[in-house]
Length: 397
Image (cartoon, rainbow, N blue to C red; front, side, top):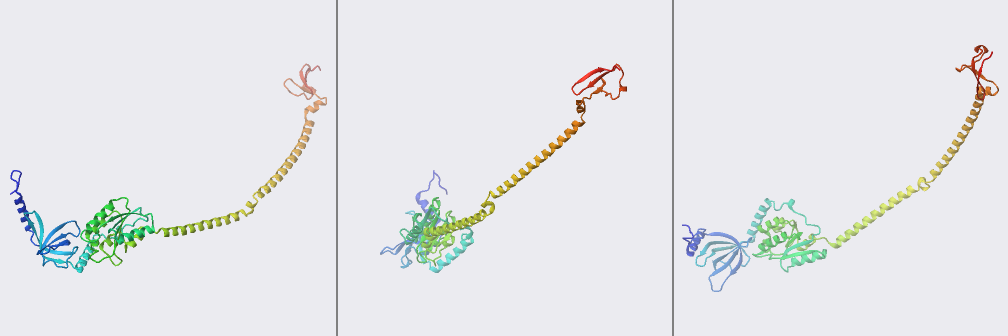
């Protein structure tokens, strides 16, 4: 039978049906953590709040007083054999328990070891995915207990090493039923903050039960999902909760985390001074070596007296010029004398010189030279070439 706007179910029917469905669950074994125990004087029933160890979910449990051991306290990890019951008149759900077993340390360690193997098989401990925190973060996120010794250790030692370091501190419960929920919420908040370069998860020492939240599966997976590098500083050196294996860096103590997150300013200054001194010596040695090489080069004759070669070559050039000038003058003088002799011989052999002595040359109008009287006849026109000019004559006999 279904309900409809025309035929709605009354509240009693809804409550009755819910009770029937819940009743079908029967008896269950439930794992959880006791958040609160209410023992009222004179009452045979004890009221407990059973909380999930990894989520913000809780249920009310009722049990006879003889079922709840007197040594059972808030925060204890238990396994409860109970049956869900629905109180129809009040519309509430609770668990009626007939047996409550406190989980012993041995069983808890066995569960943690089983969880460790599971997470390791899934690759949450893989060293290849671990990130190196920045050398000098601008801002550090710190998740720790309010006013705890771990907070003082981290802040004091980090600021002593690097006074200008900036922290964003988120105070949470680091043990008890609310620890996992608070830590996961703070972790996610710091991971969303882009100004935070690295996150420190810190807690001081404690018993095995006190450190149980840091081996919780939900917290391990939240650390694995962080984009920001996470440094785990839980307890002392022998303490190794599962979050140490998942974190990018494991610090043995909160003080060790402060040393790992920022460099030591005094050590860096000393290292810088040593480096500067080494660099200064290297530069000075290089300058001295180059100065010696330069002095050796400058001591060479070509650089000691750079004009010596020029002077020597200038003297050679001057001597060569003088020799060339004397040679040219001698050649010109001899050529002039030879030319004078040739000119004298030429003048002696020239017809003009003969004509100058009173001789003449007879030529026909055609230019033929008359060398014998038989070559001309009376009446022939002839041309007489003298030393100075010509004459036209006619042969008369």
